Amino acid sequence: MPEHEDMTTRCGFVAIVGAPNAGKSTLLNRMAGTKLSIVSPKAQTTRFRVLGILMRNNAQMLLVDTPGIFRPRRMLDRAMVAAAWTGAEDADITLLIVDARAGLTEDVREIVSQLAQRNRRVWLVLNKTDLMKRDALLPLTAELSGLLPVEHVFMISARSGQGVDDLMDRMAAELPVGPYLYPEDDLTDLPDRLLAAELVREQIFLQTHEEVPYAATAETESFQERPDGSVRIEVTIYVARASHKAILIGERGSRIRSIGERARKELSRLLDRPCHLFLNVKERSGWDEERARLRAIGLDDA
Image (cartoon, rainbow, N blue to C red; front, side, top):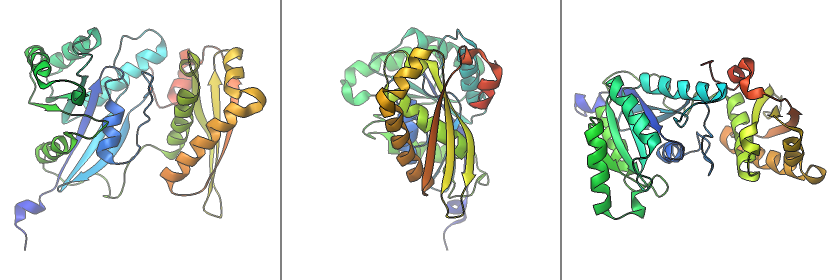
């Protein structure tokens, strides 16, 4: 019989916070071994909390990915920042992800000062450390630790996975003792409808350039189960200007077909079932200032 201690279960929330492009979503996906949060080369793509559920060493880690915290201007920005801090408030452990190459930027300083006021358990995770010499990391670690009390410091590469296993083992060991909150085989509580919209939006980011992605959002209008086990999904993409609509649709509809095809493949893989995806593009100026639209994409008013 195994010892009683080995049967003890632990469960808790881990918030992942950091400046835009620090590598938060890449880390979440690396830890969970699947794609739970969209990753794009452009900043500020995550607009709401994504809960990745990760089982490790008799521990259930509930990973909360938050939008990059930055200085808000529009209502959409304010809602994103509010969602990020809500994620941090709920967490047992907060992972502060810092791009080691970018160092102590103004955005990082702002986040550090906010965390210092909140009196949370913070672990410092320096990302992209495989691209730097060890000696260069020590002053940055010292400077950050001087501004904010941190329990642990980890040096990782979210992209390659270097150092991530150590981080996960420590998280599993230090979460509170308690029963699991979710069935063990659940990977995410992100509703399938939101996942469909996010994957469409990810393709908009990957396949269009300049300002188009920032002026577009995607909403799932209908999600219907079909008798053959497949699902029929309709997603509407809202853009702020007619010129953006033209770019998204592309010559003879080529761009929108490509966005739909790639999003459908990814969605079918994640839902493990055939998906029929239909996309619609509508012009709606000022959508990012509309409260109803913000609620529809999973953000509360801020």
